[in-house]
Image 1 (cartoon, rainbow, N blue to C red):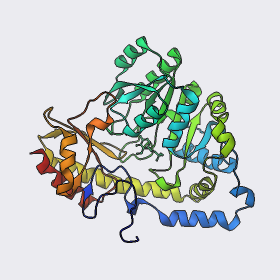
Image 2: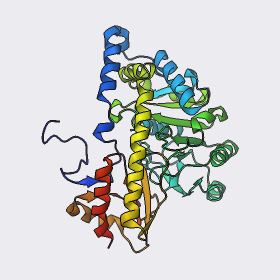
Image 3: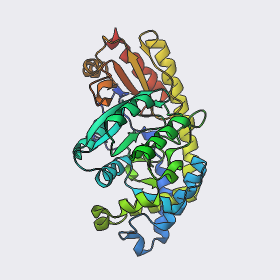
Length: 378
Ligand SMILES: Cc1ncc(COP(=O)(O)O)c(C=O)c1O
């Protein structure tokens, strides 16, 4: 790496272990696979493949993606149910454009992925939080809110939720979809961690529930290949897909990430992506366990948490008196860092919570980072 280069926004100074960073570590990013897949593509690329492409996505890529999802999700996916995106952030922005209008209400989980809040606010959407339980969003609370208003959509992170690491049960996923059908709102399921399980598989992705005609499942290659590819997909029904395809930005720009999709097609078809995901599962399982152990060593009795079975995050609850945002500001002095809980709330909650990510550092650094954090909580 070129010395002194800024590698990403918010990169910590050398020597600091910031467990707040929610990105994969460099050693999990497979330059070799993308080299091979790109070489395979460009060796035979035809000029039309460098053009705008088909808005929904190149047919061959959608075929490969459908095969990948059929095996990954354990249910048949078809190319007609898929649409290429620039990753889940872009998909959220698109969904907010197509399926909501300024002033509409959207329901989110409480807590939820904080950067989604900013996207909804860009679209002038009102956000109402539905409390999370270990089995997924609290269904009674959801029903109470539905008694007051019908949202344009419910934004949910069903598997290995960000920030809690919890997964909605199969029954909870079905209940939410049934309520959406009954009340006439959409379920926007953000599923970037679905395939990152380290023990048993999570309940079936919401992408397998598109026949309900109320589900938009957002998938991404960011966490299973490389965030920089800026490639993902929406899996949904024909009716909802047609509504997406009528969008002006797409009509002007064509396929959102045509060339990346060709490269990733080769990574899928060669089997390299599948093998890489297996490696990720093994590496991240080691890191989950290292973090869990280090937490038991340094934070037993001080915080409560459950070890996640997949994804990227631990969610720690401290005593009510702890102000994690204030402690976070002191963390750089100890060359450590974490994400304070309050940013994940749409309602000013979780000031005594902390999110830790185990994907950005190796096991030794994770142990070190947790040990360095400890004095902040004395
Ligand atoms: C829940 C959730 N949604 C979306 C994203 C961003 O996804 P993408 O890189 O595909 O834009 C992340 C990444 O941290 C995430 O955790």
